[in-house]
Image (cartoon, rainbow, N blue to C red):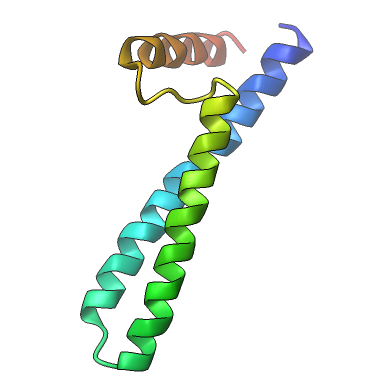
Amino acid sequence: MNATVQSTLTDQTIATDMLITAKSAVKELAVAITESASPQVRTFLKQEFNNAVAFQESLYGYMQSKGLYNAYNIKQQIQTDIQNATTALNL
């Protein structure tokens, strides 16, 4: 396997992990906002929620621009996922 394939797989793995974490942070912050009894804490959590959404959006944009994630072309994304799984199995 050449260095480009290894580099792309590594970049994709890292970016995907970060995207999953960012999505989780958005969900958890939303729950924390609804559970908070303090207006000051809610204000802080809303700011963090907006930051988390912005980060997730920019990360997705990066991934899409690099061809690492394509939410608008499911067939292509499935092919990419299959290719990555096959590559990982052959390492």
